Length: 310
Length: 288
Image (cartoon, rainbow over the protein chains, first blue to last red):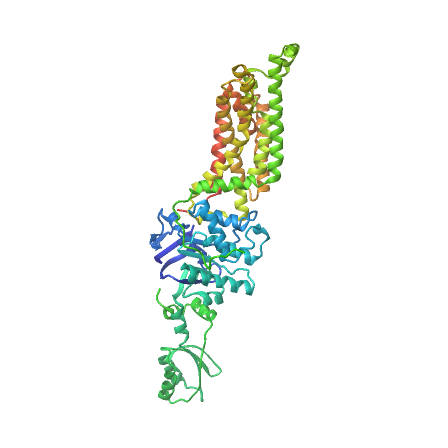
């Protein structure tokens, strides 16, 4: 679906994306990173709105940085982060307008506007000016305009921004529905980890214009399954502690509890290890890491290798 | 109760749609027409002006043809313009001033409304190139004054033709002069409005910008004309330029401006404001 190598994007002297290399498969990709990490810049580059300073890549088989970018944009839907709504028109009028702008005929765009507004559950309100819409409704209009021409790929930039828990759930359900029912691939940029965790099957973590980690959510979960908390009957000697590295990576040690990422997701390993070093293991607790911890670790730079190839 | 499909029907073909310029122009024209208050007020003003024009035309016809009114002929000829001046007067300041106001009020938001609602980057996220965007805006800004001016060209001419044929108060060939004049006026007005709108952050600000440009350049032109004792400096102002063009094309005896200053002023304004509009509507990103 998307592949790029050594992609570098600059805003004048500032390097916004620093030599990124990545390959993404069809599905829902979560693009995670703190504010200013380069998520929106990456989306704009993939849309052909920004010309890479160096590197190469392709989206849906169309090379980046060529004059075919306009054609590419007809095959992609984009839901921006900011409030890009034509306030003095109804949802129906503007969704039809965006449909026509994407290449549909007037008649097709009108039909499609009705259909897509029904799809995002705005059919009752579609003739009202969007200036009177709630935040959730406004987000759904933005999603509708991104879907009106049935793109093969849709970029959602912070789709749950400003939504209450119910609105967030609805929006994420819609994202899942877009993939499940329409077969459209989704790239969802967000800084809300729970959202990404809920819908994505691939994950890319960006920070300061660099990919800190990338891989499948299944790979991530597999990696998370390697984390255990270990407690021994007696405190370990320095020599015994030194041997812990053979078992895996010690992420944290406090109050006699070792937070260890095992070399393999096999809970028998700590018992064997304890036997080898002559210690008694009294606690073995799987650590169900939250994604936010993963993100923090990724941003500290000690996860990229373990999460998966990119 | 309608029965909806459980999901979206299959994707339609994307290749049959209109060109983005057509889509954007149509959308902008719809937005202008939807401004009902402005549409009503300016529609009423132009209707009254057109009506007065028709009454004057009919009066001229009666004075020239009715034996009972022959006594008024000399007096009427003194107070009413004749010949080329009368023809050029069909598009004159009394309709061009409301037209400037209409451009400022109704068309001023053509670009600034996109800036206010922040939809330009989203437009560029569609298969639209910057040149498509600016061409569509310029086209919409040009069509609107043309639609207003056309009845002033066609209706009096048609009435004159219907009343008196070739011998009517309006020349048979008048539209051949008036249409090019209207075309230049439309281009100039569209360029000024487009540039002003591109500089403004909201339609309200655009209103100020359009009037500011028209009145500001007129004031500067007047100062230069006064100081240098040469009224050709008035060509700095689009307000005087639009008035000068029908006179120049009809070759009236004492036009407001001469050909060279009018050409230079018009070309400079069109180039300057178009350049500003292009520069100000470039996507902040470098669109390929």
